[in-house]
Amino acid sequence: MSTLIKSLAGLGLGAALTLTAGTAMAEGSGCGTFTNAEGVDEHLACSTAPIDFTNKGSLQNGAKIFMNYCAGCHSAKYVRHSRIAQDLEIPPELVEKYLMVTTDQIGDHITAEIDPEVQASWFGAAPPDLSLETRLRGDDWVYTYLLSFYEDPSRPWGANNLVLANAAMPHVLHNMQEELSQEEFESEVGDLVNFMAWMGEPARHDRQVIGFFVILFLLVLLIPVYLLNKEFWKDVK
Image (tube, rainbow, N blue to C red; front, side, top):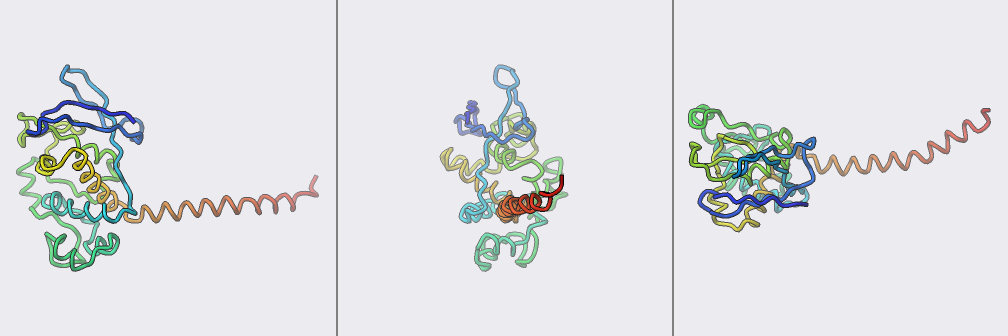
């Protein structure tokens, strides 16, 4: 593991932005390149997102952050509130009270609170649906992107991003970043990305567990199959 530290005036924070480089990079391309203060292009390695579908506390906190900070502008049209309650082990009454900001029916999908056409007039483009964002970009890319905002007075919303230059998205987690330490902020963003990864494939953990035992079964089955094949052909010259 290596650590990339770039001093940025982080939206009034005046603190250094620390990005921990992870080993998982999409086809070796990492999270892109950026130009440093000396005008030199540098490679930006992706930070490793803390994905763990068995950590229900992390997923629950991520759901809370998503609904409070993301659902105002972004939809998640392939995810139902009832599935959140079931898979994340949240009592339905708590989902209805705290996590349903755009509907009063727990069976409904997550829709954006603000009309996409209105948002398009604000940002230049309607914010994308986030149901499959981590599958499109990768868990580490999304995690690194959310940690890479910095102050840029030339941008309409006063912020830019190292991973996606001139992003239309404002730094919506700015207030959270100001209130928490860097370690705490990275943990909160990690929970958010963990939840987004779950949205993209709720059955991922089960698939991996079942896949492990299927491969194990086939390896064990290989032994009697090999011996049986050897027995059948032992008299063939």
